[in-house]
Length: 315
Image 1: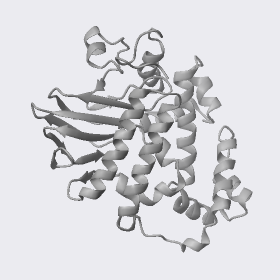
Image 2: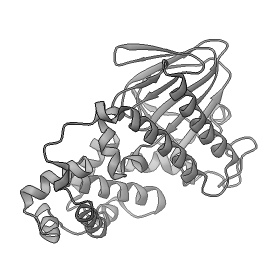
Image 3: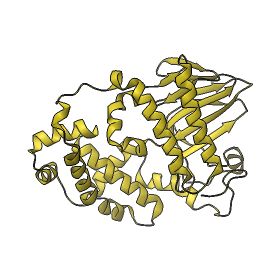
Image 4: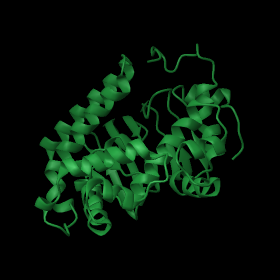
């Protein structure tokens, strides 16, 4: 991907960042210390088929927003809500009288919570709220709390926004968890949350070391086979997937927050070789570490005195 600064036109259209597309892959830009952005609009727009790592929510107040995704057409009207999962190709066409909020946010802060694994299947599918007025009203109220918090930009606004999103997913999870949760392969009473949490703490404290499934199983006193099955049931990820995500999250943060070299970051995040790091990073982020740094580093190299949004102060 070619490194470049946003054009003047992009800055005018997207004062809270700008769109970066590579084929159908869009890389969402966020303001510093944030992983959520909101695009309000009262102008009809069209977005060709694209995908991104962020979850997308459309909250229309006037007009109709037409989405095409997974061979389905969703005509989202005022009072209705459509939640699009991460990594799903979709396009959007809006009617001329449109007025809506478009919310995009990274799912990692949500999926890190243990019990979110119970609704992991639900989060992989589009959620279209259109025939349950009471639930739609509750979700709309929470989303408007997110919007208000985002534009007030008080201290810790990003965390506050996620607190409302967590409430939304807790509400949806209570409604859908029974149907969405995968069948358990082990009786629930055989999982001790304290033991599993201690295993996760051990991983978080030793991710930079050459730790293995056997090391963590021995730490909690389980056989590696029992621990492997129980850990996946508890966290929703295999041990290797969990450890890889932890290391990649650390590396992603170092890429945009420090001037360290790619090799130094790979070593500090716990990767045994830079080749392994590059391969896993590309699989997870759909770009190389260098491209990731150039994309998200644009925000931190910009003029620090530039306003992020009209009437909005940096948090």
